[in-house]
Length: 303
Image 1: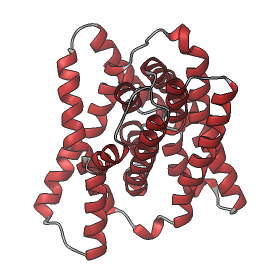
Image 2: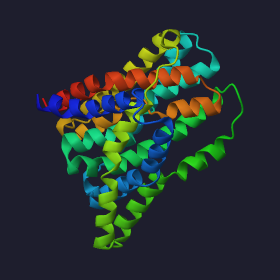
Image 3: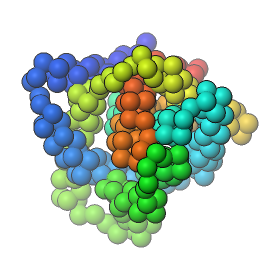
Image 4: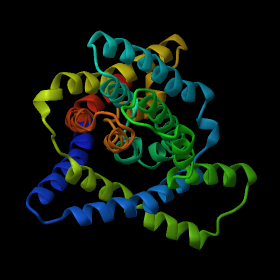
């Protein structure tokens, strides 16, 4: 019951964002500007301050592998399913990237914070940066290989490395390893600004939800959502079971892996020549289904 009482309010905020956008209380321009603001300032600061406060000793290499190995395993499975469904190139690339490309920065960090508190945020900050880099690079490569257009892969990957969240991750790790202190007054200012990130991000996710010809892509979108929310964390559960690691110690890994498909998946599919309709519907369906996934995996981990 405690898990449900923690997860449900998060998604009520997302629903709130959806409603106030549909009612015209907030406009598309505001959504665009707010998304850009969160992306450039509060979110990177949330990652940076989380890393600064974290204990690197609590992040084991096995936890990092628990993200990488299941992702590649799901990648292979998604390709197999995509070929079995006889998906065309652009649709195949989009289908595959939506099965592993999670919204770890917005929804993942929000669930970690409200479910596990500051400890969850500290545990997840470094892993979030790693996952964002891994997911985006893999998504670009896959979409480019199966693209209906042309794209400079190297240029796209460099642009990902230069994103604020990735820079914040590297800076946070640099400050920790070098022992360079952050002035207390500056750190407190960063924390204040970073506190805007999660509630604002949840509202923007709700406001951005849309459905594009759902009947046309429903079969593929629901398959993508199930793979993303249940199969990917399931691979991690199998991995941890093999290493005899208690699930309660790695709940934050399950939360990050069970995040719904990232909204940037739609942008990438549109820009690189994939299937934007499939990507948009995969984002929507996985977001709608994700509360059940979070409750399921949190319950499994705390048994």
